[in-house]
Amino acid sequence: MTKKIALLGSTGSIGRQTLEVIENLGPGYRVAALTARSNYKLLEQQVRRFKPELAVLSDETAAATLRQNLGGTNCRVEGGAEGQVTAARWPAADLVVVALVGFSGFFPTLAALEAEKVVALANKEALVVGGELLERRGLLQPERILPLDSEHSAVRQCLEGSSPSQVRRIWLTASGGPFHSWKPEQLARATPAEALAHPNWRMGPKITIDSATLMNKGFEVIEAHWLFGLPPEQIEVVIHPQSAVHSAVEFIDGSVLAQLGPPDMRLPIQYALGYPERKANPWPRLDFFKQELTFDAPDREKFPCLKLAEQALRAGGTAPACLNAANEVAVAQFLDGTLAFTGIPQLIERVMADHEVIYSPEPPELEKADRWARRHAKELLKQRLDGS
Image 1 (cartoon, rainbow, N blue to C red):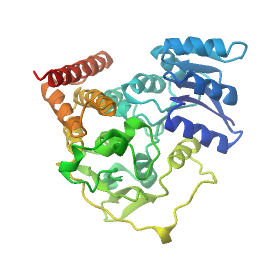
Image 2 (cartoon, helix red, strand yellow):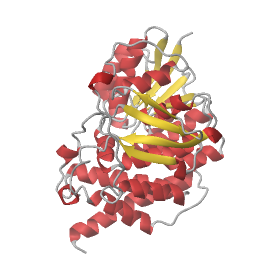
Image 3 (cartoon, one colour):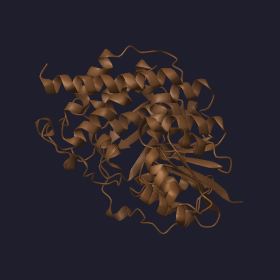
């Protein structure tokens, strides 16, 4: 039986690797829908290669160009945020891969789960912002959400056949990013180019900066809470620079199961797409004889984003949505060169301190918190630049 896939965010790093995996898996997999934000040139190439029924660009102008370029083909072209939701609900799709970046991935994820699709989730923000709402609606079903993060994929593999009551804690590994060994005074002078030079993983710019600040790991703590139903005190972070151990589970009897592999996102992607089967592939293998495995505790004072994410998880309600929105603004400003690397957590902390948390939020309240946090972060930045 052919597995039909809607891939949301096909032109990004995860999206491109997902298409590579689909090609390697062969004729048992077919692309039913592809979406992107504005890269109509690459999306057109992908459409001509994979022949989906639907193509979506969030940017309406880019969608109009794509529609014209694909005239005469059988591919329907949609534009705008609603087009992403249409793709998430696409009737022909069995599996929806959500590889969109940021808050834009929440509503398509919600739509796919409500449409009873299986979701392969790479969009951290869907659970960071909306995990509480998804749980309240009964949508966080393990058989319906397959995590694409290497860490959560590892935990899921280690937990196969075990109940949460048998788990003492889970260990989420973090490479530490490019600044793990830097002194605190050096971080203030870190440049975007230095922050983007991740030692192990091939990722998009936003998630690479989040890795450098450890916000990415903070997001993963929040995700793990919702995915595996564990309280925050049972979720630990450990720095593992080699990125060979992708995460581990410690059980109540003292046993620890870990999942290892090369730092290659195609492996967790293939695990999710092929689940419950494992399939052969031609990619690099882990060589135990060339591995030195080291572990260290994270420095929450040097990298306060991890601590801020843990605080947002404990606060609940709209606090994680505020955290995410402020982080998106701060990362964009850092990449533009208008905010220092150490200014990222400082700005997020200010925004969170000013936020009035709404508990048990519904989608409109999550949107409102997201908009408020973005606006407030920009206002604080303007005040800072104006010297007021």
